[in-house]
Length: 343
Image 1 (cartoon, one colour):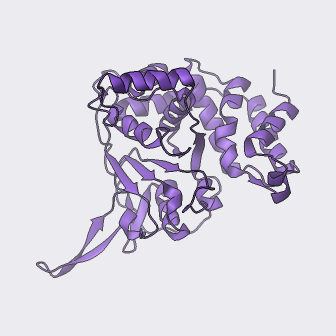
Image 2 (image 1 turned 180 degrees about the vertical axis):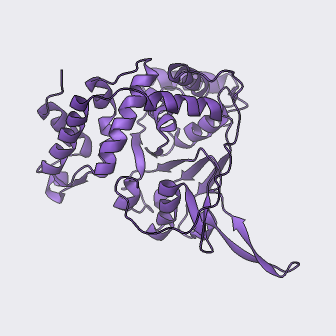
């Protein structure tokens, strides 16, 4: 049973479809090589945003979902499209709008007049990488339609749970909640995301480079037209995942993760701290971070590097703390300063 999941019985699952896409490399690359090639392809289109690119690479290796947040125009959608292009995986996009229905995402049964039978029409969730664009522009019932798919890697249609293609990754984008026409994501759905990644404005020199590329006639809206190629496949992704799983994570580091999570639950600024699911995902992300560095063991620095994107969306601030100017990241900075890492 997955961490944080209940014991509710599920309908019998159909066999999982095979992974889409094959690696052009034989044998599959190491985790460090995977990240180097992944980063190089994304850099052909996206200028800057190095932290966001690394976190998306870690999420792919772990098998977790990513919530990308930033103001319009900083490259959230472009990043998702480029990732799918570089990995030779199936990619579908759903533009979330106030009138979207759950069936528009997972699919539904329709009546075939010729055969006089109902048949299942699979929705765009049946893919490898699903871009949920502006996920917080749809009401909660539509956002919640992704919950089962994100957690179980399958959806229930007509009483039968159908497995999604492997790998399956949701890259969701959202504008900050104060923007007009947005809805807050339910806490249960936020907890399904491995990372919440903030995309800030680029630095001035990066914006200058972006203008230089556009001025040269380079088409940056289309990753393929910009020269992005499928340098990695499903076999490379699976090999990177296996390497990350094999990374040693000591008992002392596990205790450090528990102490960090406990400190968030005891922080006076918070009504809700990090969940047990968040602890498991933090450990997995730290192991993947070590694998990207070519190490077979994790260190406290690996944990520190991913604690903010792993925990920030699982924390719920008290209203008075928000008024006082506290943020999830500022609370996490205090937590990191108060908990002594193992030597």
